[in-house]
Length: 182
Image 1 (tube, rainbow, N blue to C red):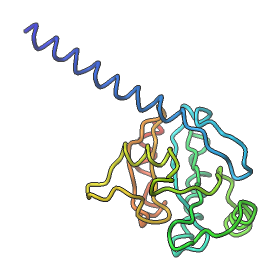
Image 2 (image 1 turned 90 degrees about the vertical axis):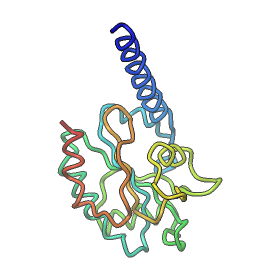
Image 3 (image 1 turned 90 degrees about the horizontal axis):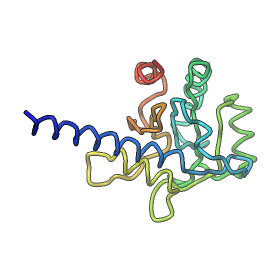
């Protein structure tokens, strides 16, 4: 009986420790916004976060519209969408920060936070993306970001909880988001 209690307590502490570790790790990341200003992800503590690598000249670029719709629908409940432009996939995000921001604003009226162009794969991948891929690995041997508009859903405690294929449309995400907003 005592053995079972001790084992249960040890298991509980292990789960809490692992959860706290990934929580504190996520909020330690600093990124540059689209204007080049440092942003500490800790400012999003307590919010549900959808992180997306984006591109302006991709067949999936119309997903910007759905991402903005999600942001507008759920931001008052605590959702924030963070867009990270990336030029690693067939050079589909070639523009400067100013050009990217102008495109997103003019074409899709994007109001969610955009960040500087980063790399999401390879040795030069941004540490945030290395962390996300480590926390939510793919089942295949290749754990790289597959294409533009791959998505990561982060809970209010900074825990990465789900990874979505680039082909998963923003319109398919409300049920996943609503669970975390409760």
